[in-house]
Image 1 (spheres, helix red, strand yellow):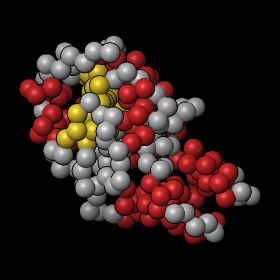
Image 2: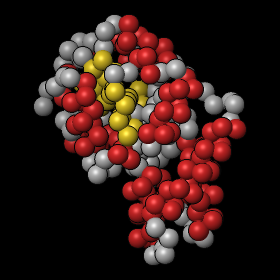
Image 3: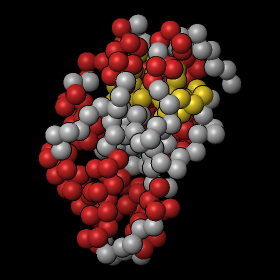
Length: 221
């Protein structure tokens, strides 16, 4: 039986991809690099610092990864503060409340920086529902490495086979499976060119995984 649910944030709770996209591309322009769509899409689900390390290696940049991170976060902060139309993804707040009211333990496991996570959680008053928030930026390895989901399961207080992960990215799904946790792939129009083939189930609407539909899941490995 499912006792804990681990949520990704970008693409699952919030559609912040347009802001991240704009912030990254403004940073790319500032440092003078031309990042292909294919390379950019391969970053999905990874932490900013690891993306910037890859960029420095790929383009032989003289700037440090930390400098690139600071530039990207400067642009993102500006867009976040000026975007009054930013909303949660349709149905996710109802799903969070449904799980919470039925006694499930909720944990966030996002590749976003903790400052970005806190901005979202404060703006939409989400802290009341979650027992823990983990940022990939605070960990040694990025998705698809399973570290963040292993630690998220530990933070929930339950075994991996009592947890499920909700993810929208190829890297996130790979990370959940590498952690031996049942993974729901959320395939929405916000997610582009992601591979859901490794997910245990794939949904396009959060109504498909309300408490009454997932509370009997008994994943085994």
